[in-house]
Image (spheres, rainbow, N blue to C red):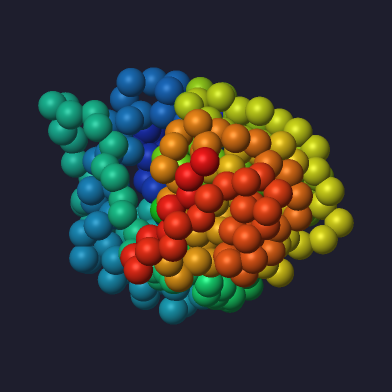
Length: 321
């Protein structure tokens, strides 16, 4: 645990910088500690340089050896407000404090990833995955994502399709999902993300709270709320969040949506891709409850109800007026 003391410090700038290195390189750093660190950096121009120099010193092998020895002795990780001890003392005694007035850029530490994975499904395939922290992901058909847990960040990039997330609660590591232009941030919740195209993403919340950001805008969503992010704009609305998303059971609920959206859902299950020949036809609105896991049934219904022509080919199915 890291304890930060707000009282005026009796330490030198170098000693404070070394103590901040100890604090910021801990396995978990509370948000209030990060905020106080930012305030300390901004408080005086010398602070950034001192921290940069101390970070460079920290990476020296003798210091690491000294720290390893101290840990074997049972030393705890603490932010020391008055007495310089543990790792800080090792740094200073070994004389690794240097001064470089030509640069004040802070070094960028790159922690090694603790977990990474790439997931991809073909048409009609649904994949359920359990991550090491207990988070569960259900990936829809014809979808793809990458997972990377690194330091205090859990990051997922949804590059195609749709996924359901049941995120394990961990306040020390926020869970981020990037999908198109949208960025979703949570601590622990259940939500669904549908990447409709490169600039359109739909986020639906089934439990907890989710923050959706796009460009300079962001909104908070709670149970039963969903948002569509498109070209930097975010539109929020309500939905029935009593059950899991329909797609997990092969269904799609449509209420005055464009045909193109419905066909995008069908293509997550269709072995032969379906294309719409005419942009005007793609913009036609349709309604109903469609069994998208049975593409032939959906296409048959579109022909009967809306008079849409279906031309089956070997490599593609084309819809025309």
